[in-house]
Amino acid sequence: EAGVAQSPRYKIIEKRQSVAFWCNPISGHATLYWYQQILGQGPKLLIQFQNNGVVDDSQLPKDRFSAERLKGVDSTLKIQPAKLEDSAVYLCASSPEQGIGTEAFFGQGTRLTVV
Amino acid sequence: SQKIEQNSEALNIQEGKTATLTCNYTNYSPAYLQWYRQDPGRGPVFLLLIRENEKEKRKERLKVTFDTTLKQSLFHITASQPADSATYLCALEELSFGAGTTVTVRA
Image (cartoon, rainbow over all chains, first blue to last red; front, side, top):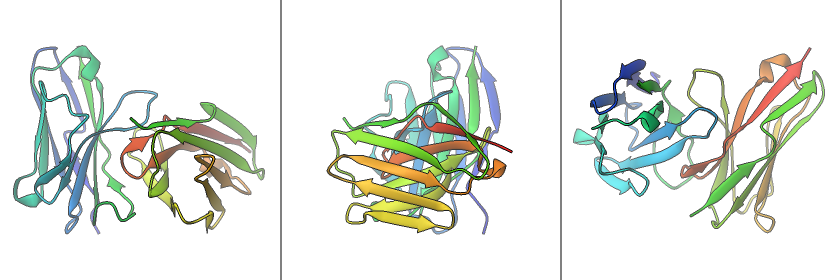
């Protein structure tokens, strides 16, 4: 079974530029999560999708971050414009269902450096 | 909002000993709590899930307890091995992760 795929693996941009990350979850997984993990901290949930609908985006900085999951499969997370404090690893995870206690499968993440 | 804290940032133990990690939380009553392992440069990997009506869960050399009155979970690695060296994360459902405890097992 293929795992969660993320790209790119690394990205360096200047502040005020825009950037997009892509995630392909495990086939058949209904729930998709995006997390931000700053060095030395645990992952912080940014947004959760159930199929192609948003379940929770309460911690997504909506003035600069946006995410979509078209057709309930792949997802993209965009930052525009980026700030220095956005430097972090962006993790995508998927699980078969939401809220019933199934494990989440994580991708390797995209390491973003904003200079 | 919910808050989750894990004990000391680092834990150094001798091979063969038991590592005990603590996870405390406030302002939330999770239906379940999860533990993950994270190696440098990798995404977290699921280890164990324990539900609010369960007191203890075991998987091979791992054991998790869950005390909803104390709002605390303990994670034990018995007969530790150098390969167990990693950062271990506690999570309230999928919503909130602790900062993790880095375990180093000395041969």
